[in-house]
Image (tube, helix red, strand yellow):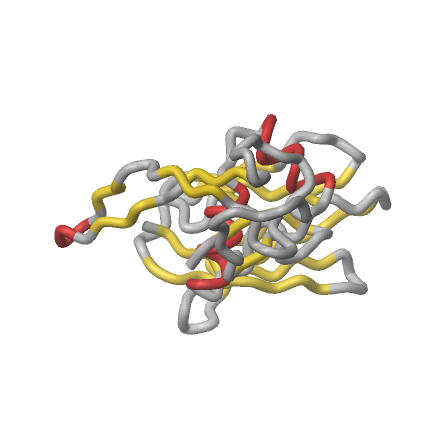
Length: 177
């Protein structure tokens, strides 16, 4: 699968990044891609005259929040978004009011509420049997900093979360390695 923010018509020159070794001897190669014109000069506009490009299979929503996270947040937004689709996990960029990352996680989970409305939220974490195993209160006071949940006490597996402000609910999955 090819993942990108860009590429309305496939203007990508691919540069191999190298394999990432996974358990059981599996390997994945993540390419670096840039939009190139016919002279192989990097373009900001992917609608330029194309040479040897590819069409991305997965297009990350091009939002201000995703761009900030990509360049300042030390998060590979494109990879996280692709994993969320491929693993069917609600993650970064999928819900524009809520950012949940990293997902999968091991020890800590960051939750950032992007709504501009100042509200008190409650988050409940459920195991795969539907039992509530954790609950916490989150406050959205317009801060740019996420709330970090300590999940070290949880064993590896799939969990579900429900975030509510008393009126609206947002639900999703969390994978703990």
